[in-house]
Image 1 (cartoon, one colour):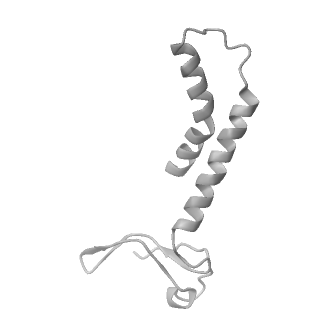
Image 2 (tube, one colour):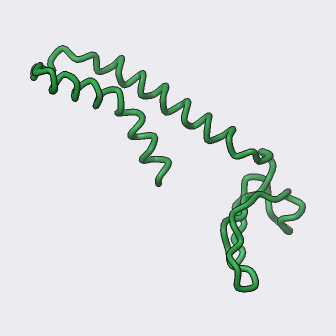
Length: 99
């Protein structure tokens, strides 16, 4: 959900910035705004953010995500494991939940 809200914010950021600057400068007429160009800039920001998230995890694309869980009374942080270490029936891209 956080990633969705971040991308929605990045998509609308150029349009919001433009409208805020126009409002502060006293130009209240928003009829001639470059909405399409601003939304395209926002779309580029969203694509860049998705690429950064994709390539910044440092995990192998074939790895399996293990979310945070309790083990022997201690919290174990999220991590990635090789599919063969994740157990039977687990495929690359799966999320393993350890209860």
